Length: 541
Image 1: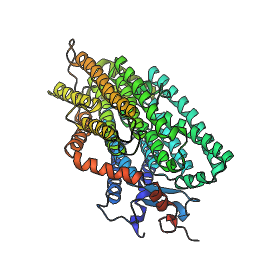
Image 2 (image 1 turned 90 degrees about the vertical axis):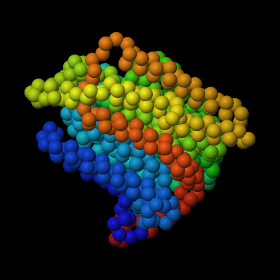
Image 3 (image 1 turned 90 degrees about the horizontal axis):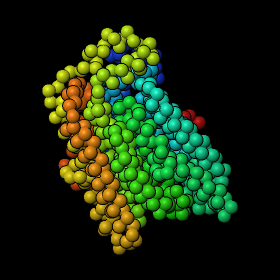
Protein backbone atom coordinates (compact mmCIF):
# COMPACT_ATOMS: atom_id res chain seq x y z
CA UNK A 1 0.00 0.00 0.00
CA UNK A 2 1.30 3.45 -0.85
CA UNK A 3 0.22 7.04 -1.34
CA UNK A 4 -2.66 9.05 0.07
CA UNK A 5 -5.12 6.22 -0.55
CA UNK A 6 -3.56 4.39 2.39
CA UNK A 7 -5.31 6.73 4.81
CA UNK A 8 -8.94 6.19 3.74
CA UNK A 9 -9.77 3.91 6.72
CA UNK A 10 -8.79 6.54 9.31
CA UNK A 11 -10.85 9.35 7.74
CA UNK A 12 -14.25 8.35 9.25
CA UNK A 13 -12.68 8.88 12.68
CA UNK A 14 -10.45 11.84 11.83
CA UNK A 15 -13.04 14.00 10.04
CA UNK A 16 -15.66 14.19 12.85
CA UNK A 17 -12.90 14.53 15.47
CA UNK A 18 -11.45 17.60 13.75
CA UNK A 19 -14.89 19.02 12.92
CA UNK A 20 -16.10 18.67 16.50
CA UNK A 21 -12.97 20.37 17.84
CA UNK A 22 -13.20 23.24 15.34
CA UNK A 23 -16.89 23.78 16.16
CA UNK A 24 -16.33 24.08 19.93
CA UNK A 25 -15.43 27.82 19.91
CA UNK A 26 -18.54 28.67 17.84
CA UNK A 27 -21.09 28.18 20.59
CA UNK A 28 -23.61 30.85 19.63
CA UNK A 29 -21.82 32.99 17.09
CA UNK A 30 -21.64 32.78 13.29
CA UNK A 31 -24.45 30.27 12.71
CA UNK A 32 -23.75 30.13 8.98
CA UNK A 33 -20.16 29.07 9.55
CA UNK A 34 -21.21 26.47 12.12
CA UNK A 35 -23.83 25.00 9.84
CA UNK A 36 -21.45 24.90 6.87
CA UNK A 37 -18.73 23.17 8.86
CA UNK A 38 -21.09 20.60 10.37
CA UNK A 39 -22.88 19.72 7.14
CA UNK A 40 -19.62 19.72 5.19
CA UNK A 41 -17.97 17.33 7.67
CA UNK A 42 -20.96 14.97 7.62
CA UNK A 43 -21.08 15.03 3.82
CA UNK A 44 -17.36 14.24 3.76
CA UNK A 45 -17.98 11.26 6.04
CA UNK A 46 -20.74 10.04 3.71
CA UNK A 47 -18.40 10.39 0.72
CA UNK A 48 -15.60 8.50 2.47
CA UNK A 49 -18.01 5.76 3.55
CA UNK A 50 -19.25 5.35 -0.02
CA UNK A 51 -15.67 5.14 -1.31
CA UNK A 52 -14.79 2.51 1.30
CA UNK A 53 -17.95 0.61 0.43
CA UNK A 54 -16.98 0.63 -3.25
CA UNK A 55 -13.45 -0.52 -2.40
CA UNK A 56 -14.59 -3.44 -0.27
CA UNK A 57 -17.12 -4.42 -2.92
CA UNK A 58 -14.46 -4.40 -5.65
CA UNK A 59 -16.08 -1.58 -7.64
CA UNK A 60 -13.04 0.64 -7.01
CA UNK A 61 -9.40 -0.32 -6.84
CA UNK A 62 -8.54 -0.84 -3.19
CA UNK A 63 -5.08 -0.01 -1.80
CA UNK A 64 -5.04 -3.26 0.13
CA UNK A 65 -4.99 -6.96 -0.80
CA UNK A 66 -8.08 -9.03 -0.09
CA UNK A 67 -11.55 -7.97 0.97
CA UNK A 68 -10.61 -6.18 4.20
CA UNK A 69 -8.44 -3.11 4.58
CA UNK A 70 -6.31 -2.77 7.70
CA UNK A 71 -4.90 0.52 8.95
CA UNK A 72 -2.16 0.10 11.57
CA UNK A 73 -1.77 3.24 13.64
CA UNK A 74 1.91 4.03 14.17
CA UNK A 75 2.90 1.11 11.98
CA UNK A 76 2.82 -1.26 14.95
CA UNK A 77 2.00 -4.80 13.91
CA UNK A 78 -1.13 -6.48 15.19
CA UNK A 79 -1.77 -7.76 17.79
CA UNK A 80 0.48 -5.27 19.60
CA UNK A 81 -0.66 -2.17 17.77
CA UNK A 82 -4.01 -0.50 17.26
CA UNK A 83 -5.64 -1.41 13.96
CA UNK A 84 -8.75 -0.23 12.16
CA UNK A 85 -10.34 -2.84 9.93
CA UNK A 86 -12.73 -1.95 7.12
CA UNK A 87 -14.56 -4.85 5.51
CA UNK A 88 -17.92 -4.99 3.77
CA UNK A 89 -19.97 -4.96 6.97
CA UNK A 90 -18.02 -2.10 8.52
CA UNK A 91 -18.36 -0.06 5.32
CA UNK A 92 -22.13 -0.65 5.23
CA UNK A 93 -22.47 0.56 8.82
CA UNK A 94 -20.31 3.61 8.08
CA UNK A 95 -22.47 4.58 5.11
CA UNK A 96 -25.70 3.98 7.05
CA UNK A 97 -24.49 6.09 9.99
CA UNK A 98 -23.35 8.95 7.76
CA UNK A 99 -26.62 9.10 5.80
CA UNK A 100 -28.78 8.94 8.93
CA UNK A 101 -26.55 11.48 10.66
CA UNK A 102 -26.78 13.87 7.71
CA UNK A 103 -30.60 13.67 7.68
CA UNK A 104 -30.84 14.26 11.44
CA UNK A 105 -28.33 17.11 11.29
CA UNK A 106 -30.20 18.94 8.52
CA UNK A 107 -33.47 18.49 10.41
CA UNK A 108 -31.94 20.00 13.56
CA UNK A 109 -31.24 23.32 11.83
CA UNK A 110 -34.97 24.05 11.74
CA UNK A 111 -34.86 24.89 15.45
CA UNK A 112 -33.38 22.21 17.69
CA UNK A 113 -29.73 23.00 17.14
CA UNK A 114 -30.13 26.30 19.05
CA UNK A 115 -31.90 24.80 22.09
CA UNK A 116 -28.64 23.99 23.93
CA UNK A 117 -24.89 24.32 24.01
CA UNK A 118 -22.34 22.66 21.76
CA UNK A 119 -24.92 20.59 19.91
CA UNK A 120 -22.94 20.42 16.67
CA UNK A 121 -19.69 19.41 18.39
CA UNK A 122 -21.45 16.69 20.37
CA UNK A 123 -23.11 15.48 17.18
CA UNK A 124 -19.74 15.12 15.43
CA UNK A 125 -18.18 13.35 18.42
CA UNK A 126 -21.13 10.93 18.41
CA UNK A 127 -20.45 10.14 14.75
CA UNK A 128 -16.76 9.73 15.55
CA UNK A 129 -17.54 7.18 18.26
CA UNK A 130 -19.95 5.29 16.04
CA UNK A 131 -17.50 5.15 13.13
CA UNK A 132 -14.66 4.05 15.39
CA UNK A 133 -16.75 1.30 16.97
CA UNK A 134 -17.54 -0.12 13.53
CA UNK A 135 -13.91 0.08 12.39
CA UNK A 136 -11.83 -0.97 15.37
CA UNK A 137 -10.13 -4.35 15.45
CA UNK A 138 -9.20 -4.14 19.12
CA UNK A 139 -11.40 -4.77 22.17
CA UNK A 140 -9.97 -2.00 24.32
CA UNK A 141 -10.35 0.55 21.57
CA UNK A 142 -13.91 -0.65 21.11
CA UNK A 143 -14.34 0.37 24.76
CA UNK A 144 -12.75 3.76 24.01
CA UNK A 145 -15.00 4.44 21.04
CA UNK A 146 -18.02 3.28 23.05
CA UNK A 147 -17.13 5.85 25.70
CA UNK A 148 -16.70 8.59 23.10
CA UNK A 149 -20.11 7.96 21.55
CA UNK A 150 -21.74 7.52 24.97
CA UNK A 151 -20.25 10.73 26.37
CA UNK A 152 -21.56 12.61 23.35
CA UNK A 153 -24.93 10.88 23.58
CA UNK A 154 -25.28 11.94 27.23
CA UNK A 155 -25.07 15.59 26.24
CA UNK A 156 -27.37 15.08 23.27
CA UNK A 157 -29.95 13.18 25.36
CA UNK A 158 -30.09 16.17 27.74
CA UNK A 159 -30.19 18.69 24.90
CA UNK A 160 -33.26 20.93 25.01
CA UNK A 161 -33.96 20.87 28.77
CA UNK A 162 -37.31 19.85 30.33
CA UNK A 163 -37.89 17.69 33.45
CA UNK A 164 -39.05 14.58 31.57
CA UNK A 165 -36.06 14.72 29.25
CA UNK A 166 -33.64 15.17 32.13
CA UNK A 167 -35.19 12.29 34.10
CA UNK A 168 -35.10 9.90 31.14
CA UNK A 169 -31.58 10.94 30.19
CA UNK A 170 -30.34 10.35 33.74
CA UNK A 171 -31.70 6.79 33.64
CA UNK A 172 -29.94 6.31 30.29
CA UNK A 173 -26.68 7.69 31.68
CA UNK A 174 -26.69 5.56 34.85
CA UNK A 175 -27.44 2.32 32.98
CA UNK A 176 -24.69 2.96 30.46
CA UNK A 177 -22.17 3.95 33.14
CA UNK A 178 -22.78 0.60 34.84
CA UNK A 179 -22.44 -1.17 31.48
CA UNK A 180 -19.17 0.67 30.81
CA UNK A 181 -17.80 -0.48 34.17
CA UNK A 182 -18.69 -4.06 33.28
CA UNK A 183 -16.98 -3.60 29.91
CA UNK A 184 -13.75 -2.56 31.61
CA UNK A 185 -13.88 -5.52 34.01
CA UNK A 186 -14.60 -7.89 31.11
CA UNK A 187 -11.69 -6.51 29.07
CA UNK A 188 -9.35 -6.90 32.06
CA UNK A 189 -10.41 -10.52 32.61
CA UNK A 190 -10.00 -11.40 28.95
CA UNK A 191 -6.61 -9.72 28.69
CA UNK A 192 -5.44 -11.33 31.93
CA UNK A 193 -5.95 -14.86 30.61
CA UNK A 194 -5.59 -14.43 26.83
CA UNK A 195 -2.78 -11.88 26.80
CA UNK A 196 -4.32 -9.94 23.93
CA UNK A 197 -7.27 -7.73 23.13
CA UNK A 198 -6.92 -7.94 19.38
CA UNK A 199 -10.24 -9.31 18.14
CA UNK A 200 -8.69 -11.43 15.38
CA UNK A 201 -6.24 -13.09 17.78
CA UNK A 202 -8.66 -13.71 20.65
CA UNK A 203 -10.09 -16.86 19.10
CA UNK A 204 -6.60 -18.28 18.48
CA UNK A 205 -5.55 -17.60 22.06
CA UNK A 206 -8.82 -18.95 23.50
CA UNK A 207 -8.30 -22.28 21.76
CA UNK A 208 -4.98 -22.76 23.60
CA UNK A 209 -6.20 -21.94 27.13
CA UNK A 210 -6.33 -24.60 29.82
CA UNK A 211 -9.57 -25.35 31.65
CA UNK A 212 -9.07 -22.87 34.50
CA UNK A 213 -8.06 -19.99 32.23
CA UNK A 214 -10.84 -20.84 29.80
CA UNK A 215 -13.38 -20.51 32.61
CA UNK A 216 -12.09 -17.01 33.36
CA UNK A 217 -12.13 -16.20 29.66
CA UNK A 218 -15.75 -17.34 29.40
CA UNK A 219 -16.65 -15.25 32.44
CA UNK A 220 -15.11 -12.18 30.83
CA UNK A 221 -16.91 -12.95 27.59
CA UNK A 222 -20.20 -13.35 29.48
CA UNK A 223 -19.77 -9.90 31.06
CA UNK A 224 -18.87 -8.52 27.65
CA UNK A 225 -21.99 -10.08 26.16
CA UNK A 226 -24.15 -8.46 28.85
CA UNK A 227 -22.66 -5.08 27.94
CA UNK A 228 -23.43 -5.59 24.27
CA UNK A 229 -26.97 -6.75 25.09
CA UNK A 230 -27.52 -3.52 27.05
CA UNK A 231 -26.29 -1.49 24.08
CA UNK A 232 -28.50 -3.54 21.74
CA UNK A 233 -31.62 -2.88 23.81
CA UNK A 234 -32.21 -6.58 24.47
CA UNK A 235 -34.74 -7.81 27.01
CA UNK A 236 -34.62 -7.57 30.03
CA UNK A 237 -31.92 -4.89 29.85
CA UNK A 238 -33.88 -2.40 27.73
CA UNK A 239 -36.24 -0.78 30.26
CA UNK A 240 -34.44 2.55 29.84
CA UNK A 241 -34.71 2.75 26.05
CA UNK A 242 -38.30 3.86 25.22
CA UNK A 243 -38.25 6.78 27.66
CA UNK A 244 -34.71 7.89 26.76
CA UNK A 245 -35.31 7.78 23.00
CA UNK A 246 -38.85 9.10 23.20
CA UNK A 247 -37.91 12.07 25.39
CA UNK A 248 -34.89 13.14 23.33
CA UNK A 249 -35.26 15.91 20.78
CA UNK A 250 -36.38 14.56 17.37
CA UNK A 251 -33.03 14.83 15.53
CA UNK A 252 -31.21 13.25 18.48
CA UNK A 253 -33.74 10.41 18.67
CA UNK A 254 -33.42 10.01 14.90
CA UNK A 255 -29.66 9.42 15.02
CA UNK A 256 -30.07 7.31 18.19
CA UNK A 257 -31.90 4.78 15.97
CA UNK A 258 -28.49 3.41 14.99
CA UNK A 259 -27.07 3.25 18.54
CA UNK A 260 -28.71 -0.07 19.40
CA UNK A 261 -27.25 -1.52 16.22
CA UNK A 262 -23.76 -0.92 17.59
CA UNK A 263 -24.50 -3.52 20.25
CA UNK A 264 -26.00 -5.87 17.66
CA UNK A 265 -22.94 -5.35 15.45
CA UNK A 266 -20.55 -6.15 18.31
CA UNK A 267 -22.49 -9.29 19.25
CA UNK A 268 -22.45 -10.46 15.64
CA UNK A 269 -18.76 -9.72 15.15
CA UNK A 270 -17.63 -11.52 18.30
CA UNK A 271 -19.98 -14.48 17.83
CA UNK A 272 -18.49 -15.08 14.38
CA UNK A 273 -14.89 -14.73 15.57
CA UNK A 274 -15.40 -17.06 18.55
CA UNK A 275 -17.62 -19.66 16.93
CA UNK A 276 -14.78 -22.02 15.97
CA UNK A 277 -13.59 -22.32 19.57
CA UNK A 278 -17.06 -22.57 21.10
CA UNK A 279 -18.61 -19.17 21.61
CA UNK A 280 -19.41 -18.40 25.29
CA UNK A 281 -23.04 -18.09 26.35
CA UNK A 282 -24.07 -14.56 25.24
CA UNK A 283 -22.47 -15.06 21.83
CA UNK A 284 -23.73 -18.61 21.26
CA UNK A 285 -26.50 -19.10 18.71
CA UNK A 286 -29.29 -20.41 20.96
CA UNK A 287 -28.70 -17.65 23.51
CA UNK A 288 -28.96 -14.97 20.85
CA UNK A 289 -31.98 -16.63 19.27
CA UNK A 290 -34.08 -16.93 22.42
CA UNK A 291 -32.94 -13.55 23.70
CA UNK A 292 -34.07 -12.08 20.38
CA UNK A 293 -37.47 -13.76 20.62
CA UNK A 294 -37.95 -12.46 24.18
CA UNK A 295 -36.95 -8.97 23.05
CA UNK A 296 -39.44 -9.10 20.18
CA UNK A 297 -42.20 -10.20 22.58
CA UNK A 298 -41.43 -7.47 25.11
CA UNK A 299 -41.15 -4.85 22.39
CA UNK A 300 -44.46 -5.93 20.85
CA UNK A 301 -46.21 -5.60 24.21
CA UNK A 302 -44.78 -2.11 24.54
CA UNK A 303 -45.89 -1.25 21.02
CA UNK A 304 -49.47 -2.23 21.84
CA UNK A 305 -49.41 -0.22 25.08
CA UNK A 306 -47.84 2.95 23.62
CA UNK A 307 -50.08 6.01 23.54
CA UNK A 308 -47.65 8.46 21.92
CA UNK A 309 -45.72 8.24 18.69
CA UNK A 310 -42.32 8.88 20.25
CA UNK A 311 -42.76 6.05 22.78
CA UNK A 312 -44.08 3.81 20.03
CA UNK A 313 -40.97 4.54 17.98
CA UNK A 314 -38.78 3.49 20.92
CA UNK A 315 -40.56 0.15 21.26
CA UNK A 316 -40.31 -0.42 17.52
CA UNK A 317 -36.53 0.00 17.83
CA UNK A 318 -36.60 -2.74 20.47
CA UNK A 319 -38.58 -5.01 18.14
CA UNK A 320 -36.06 -4.47 15.35
CA UNK A 321 -33.15 -5.28 17.68
CA UNK A 322 -34.92 -8.46 18.78
CA UNK A 323 -35.50 -9.44 15.16
CA UNK A 324 -31.82 -9.04 14.38
CA UNK A 325 -30.65 -10.96 17.46
CA UNK A 326 -33.02 -13.85 16.66
CA UNK A 327 -31.91 -13.88 13.01
CA UNK A 328 -28.19 -13.84 13.84
CA UNK A 329 -28.71 -16.56 16.46
CA UNK A 330 -30.66 -18.80 14.08
CA UNK A 331 -29.09 -22.12 13.14
CA UNK A 332 -26.66 -21.71 10.26
CA UNK A 333 -25.75 -18.55 8.39
CA UNK A 334 -28.50 -18.30 5.76
CA UNK A 335 -30.37 -15.57 7.65
CA UNK A 336 -27.41 -13.22 8.00
CA UNK A 337 -27.73 -11.64 4.53
CA UNK A 338 -31.49 -10.95 4.80
CA UNK A 339 -30.94 -9.72 8.37
CA UNK A 340 -28.37 -7.16 7.18
CA UNK A 341 -30.85 -5.93 4.57
CA UNK A 342 -33.50 -5.68 7.29
CA UNK A 343 -31.03 -3.83 9.56
CA UNK A 344 -30.47 -1.08 7.00
CA UNK A 345 -34.19 -0.76 6.25
CA UNK A 346 -35.22 -0.69 9.92
CA UNK A 347 -32.63 1.94 10.88
CA UNK A 348 -33.68 4.23 8.04
CA UNK A 349 -37.38 3.68 8.80
CA UNK A 350 -36.93 4.22 12.55
CA UNK A 351 -34.92 7.38 11.98
CA UNK A 352 -37.58 8.78 9.67
CA UNK A 353 -40.32 7.88 12.15
CA UNK A 354 -38.60 9.66 15.06
CA UNK A 355 -38.34 12.81 12.94
CA UNK A 356 -41.89 12.45 11.69
CA UNK A 357 -43.37 11.91 15.17
CA UNK A 358 -42.54 15.46 16.22
CA UNK A 359 -44.03 16.89 13.03
CA UNK A 360 -47.22 14.87 13.32
CA UNK A 361 -47.79 15.60 17.00
CA UNK A 362 -46.70 19.20 16.87
CA UNK A 363 -48.79 21.52 18.95
CA UNK A 364 -47.44 24.91 18.07
CA UNK A 365 -48.12 26.56 21.42
CA UNK A 366 -46.64 23.63 23.39
CA UNK A 367 -43.61 23.45 21.13
CA UNK A 368 -43.14 27.20 21.47
CA UNK A 369 -43.31 26.97 25.27
CA UNK A 370 -40.74 24.16 25.32
CA UNK A 371 -38.39 25.99 23.00
CA UNK A 372 -38.79 29.23 24.99
CA UNK A 373 -37.83 27.40 28.19
CA UNK A 374 -34.76 25.95 26.46
CA UNK A 375 -33.65 29.32 25.08
CA UNK A 376 -34.19 31.01 28.45
CA UNK A 377 -32.16 28.34 30.22
CA UNK A 378 -29.15 29.25 28.06
CA UNK A 379 -29.62 33.01 28.26
CA UNK A 380 -31.02 33.39 24.75
CA UNK A 381 -34.49 34.75 25.56
CA UNK A 382 -33.96 37.94 23.52
CA UNK A 383 -32.91 35.91 20.51
CA UNK A 384 -35.93 33.65 20.90
CA UNK A 385 -38.31 36.63 21.06
CA UNK A 386 -36.82 38.04 17.88
CA UNK A 387 -36.96 34.77 15.96
CA UNK A 388 -40.05 33.14 17.45
CA UNK A 389 -42.51 34.04 14.71
CA UNK A 390 -40.31 32.88 11.86
CA UNK A 391 -38.89 29.78 13.51
CA UNK A 392 -42.12 28.37 14.92
CA UNK A 393 -44.39 29.17 12.04
CA UNK A 394 -41.93 28.15 9.39
CA UNK A 395 -43.03 28.29 5.78
CA UNK A 396 -46.68 27.46 5.24
CA UNK A 397 -47.05 24.35 3.09
CA UNK A 398 -50.57 23.84 1.71
CA UNK A 399 -49.97 20.12 1.34
CA UNK A 400 -48.56 19.69 4.86
CA UNK A 401 -51.17 17.19 5.98
CA UNK A 402 -50.85 15.25 2.73
CA UNK A 403 -47.09 14.99 3.21
CA UNK A 404 -47.46 13.97 6.84
CA UNK A 405 -50.09 11.38 6.00
CA UNK A 406 -48.06 9.86 3.19
CA UNK A 407 -44.86 9.86 5.25
CA UNK A 408 -46.69 8.28 8.23
CA UNK A 409 -48.18 5.61 5.98
CA UNK A 410 -44.76 4.87 4.46
CA UNK A 411 -43.12 4.57 7.87
CA UNK A 412 -45.93 2.27 9.01
CA UNK A 413 -45.29 0.01 6.03
CA UNK A 414 -41.54 0.03 6.66
CA UNK A 415 -41.70 -0.72 10.37
CA UNK A 416 -44.42 -3.36 10.27
CA UNK A 417 -43.08 -5.17 7.21
CA UNK A 418 -46.07 -4.65 4.93
CA UNK A 419 -45.68 -4.46 1.15
CA UNK A 420 -44.44 -2.90 -0.99
CA UNK A 421 -41.49 -1.15 0.71
CA UNK A 422 -38.17 -2.54 1.93
CA UNK A 423 -39.51 -3.55 5.35
CA UNK A 424 -41.64 -6.17 3.61
CA UNK A 425 -38.74 -7.31 1.44
CA UNK A 426 -36.52 -7.75 4.50
CA UNK A 427 -39.09 -9.69 6.52
CA UNK A 428 -40.13 -11.82 3.55
CA UNK A 429 -36.47 -12.69 2.91
CA UNK A 430 -36.01 -13.60 6.57
CA UNK A 431 -39.07 -15.85 6.56
CA UNK A 432 -38.07 -17.49 3.27
CA UNK A 433 -34.54 -18.15 4.52
CA UNK A 434 -35.84 -19.58 7.80
CA UNK A 435 -38.21 -21.96 6.02
CA UNK A 436 -35.46 -22.98 3.57
CA UNK A 437 -33.20 -23.79 6.53
CA UNK A 438 -35.68 -26.33 7.91
CA UNK A 439 -33.70 -29.46 6.83
CA UNK A 440 -30.92 -28.62 9.32
CA UNK A 441 -32.72 -26.21 11.67
CA UNK A 442 -35.09 -27.46 14.40
CA UNK A 443 -38.70 -27.13 13.36
CA UNK A 444 -39.60 -25.21 16.51
CA UNK A 445 -36.91 -22.62 15.70
CA UNK A 446 -38.51 -22.01 12.34
CA UNK A 447 -42.04 -21.88 13.77
CA UNK A 448 -41.10 -19.58 16.66
CA UNK A 449 -39.12 -17.21 14.45
CA UNK A 450 -41.78 -16.92 11.73
CA UNK A 451 -44.55 -16.52 14.33
CA UNK A 452 -42.59 -13.83 16.17
CA UNK A 453 -42.00 -11.90 12.94
CA UNK A 454 -45.65 -12.02 11.94
CA UNK A 455 -47.04 -11.22 15.39
CA UNK A 456 -44.65 -8.31 15.95
CA UNK A 457 -45.71 -6.90 12.59
CA UNK A 458 -49.36 -7.31 13.55
CA UNK A 459 -48.77 -5.53 16.88
CA UNK A 460 -47.08 -2.66 15.06
CA UNK A 461 -49.92 -2.44 12.55
CA UNK A 462 -52.55 -2.27 15.32
CA UNK A 463 -50.68 0.39 17.28
CA UNK A 464 -49.83 2.53 14.25
CA UNK A 465 -53.40 2.31 12.94
CA UNK A 466 -54.80 3.35 16.32
CA UNK A 467 -52.46 6.31 16.73
CA UNK A 468 -52.75 7.27 13.06
CA UNK A 469 -56.54 7.47 13.28
CA UNK A 470 -56.26 9.54 16.45
CA UNK A 471 -53.63 11.76 14.85
CA UNK A 472 -55.19 12.50 11.48
CA UNK A 473 -58.92 11.79 11.69
CA UNK A 474 -60.22 12.35 15.21
CA UNK A 475 -61.08 15.89 16.33
CA UNK A 476 -60.03 19.23 14.95
CA UNK A 477 -56.30 19.70 14.75
CA UNK A 478 -54.50 22.79 13.47
CA UNK A 479 -52.70 22.14 10.20
CA UNK A 480 -48.98 22.10 11.05
CA UNK A 481 -46.62 24.38 9.19
CA UNK A 482 -43.59 22.64 7.79
CA UNK A 483 -40.27 23.95 6.68
CA UNK A 484 -38.52 22.30 3.77
CA UNK A 485 -35.54 21.70 6.03
CA UNK A 486 -37.81 19.53 8.21
CA UNK A 487 -39.68 17.66 5.49
CA UNK A 488 -36.66 16.96 3.25
CA UNK A 489 -34.73 14.70 5.69
CA UNK A 490 -37.83 12.59 6.36
CA UNK A 491 -38.51 12.30 2.64
CA UNK A 492 -34.86 11.43 1.92
CA UNK A 493 -34.82 8.55 4.42
CA UNK A 494 -38.08 7.14 3.05
CA UNK A 495 -36.83 7.60 -0.52
CA UNK A 496 -33.68 5.61 0.25
CA UNK A 497 -35.90 2.80 1.57
CA UNK A 498 -37.81 2.97 -1.73
CA UNK A 499 -34.51 2.67 -3.60
CA UNK A 500 -33.70 -0.42 -1.49
CA UNK A 501 -37.06 -1.82 -2.55
CA UNK A 502 -36.59 -1.27 -6.28
CA UNK A 503 -33.00 -2.55 -6.09
CA UNK A 504 -33.90 -5.45 -3.80
CA UNK A 505 -32.25 -8.07 -6.04
CA UNK A 506 -28.79 -6.48 -6.28
CA UNK A 507 -29.01 -5.29 -2.66
CA UNK A 508 -29.82 -8.76 -1.38
CA UNK A 509 -26.98 -10.22 -3.45
CA UNK A 510 -24.61 -7.68 -1.93
CA UNK A 511 -25.75 -8.44 1.61
CA UNK A 512 -25.46 -12.20 1.04
CA UNK A 513 -21.88 -11.73 -0.16
CA UNK A 514 -21.27 -9.50 2.88
CA UNK A 515 -22.61 -12.28 5.11
CA UNK A 516 -20.31 -14.85 3.50
CA UNK A 517 -17.33 -12.53 4.00
CA UNK A 518 -18.33 -11.89 7.61
CA UNK A 519 -18.57 -15.58 8.47
CA UNK A 520 -15.12 -16.30 7.03
CA UNK A 521 -13.35 -15.69 10.33
CA UNK A 522 -10.00 -17.20 9.21
CA UNK A 523 -9.86 -14.77 6.28
CA UNK A 524 -10.49 -11.88 8.68
CA UNK A 525 -7.64 -13.08 10.91
CA UNK A 526 -5.31 -13.44 7.94
CA UNK A 527 -6.06 -9.89 6.86
CA UNK A 528 -5.51 -8.37 10.29
CA UNK A 529 -2.62 -10.13 11.96
CA UNK A 530 0.16 -9.75 9.34
CA UNK A 531 -1.09 -6.48 7.92
CA UNK A 532 0.74 -3.91 9.99
CA UNK A 533 4.02 -4.41 8.13
CA UNK A 534 2.35 -3.28 4.90
CA UNK A 535 -0.22 -0.72 6.02
CA UNK A 536 -0.29 3.00 6.44
CA UNK A 537 0.73 5.11 9.37
CA UNK A 538 4.22 3.56 9.63
CA UNK A 539 6.56 5.43 11.98
CA UNK A 540 10.35 5.41 11.36
CA UNK A 541 12.14 2.75 13.34
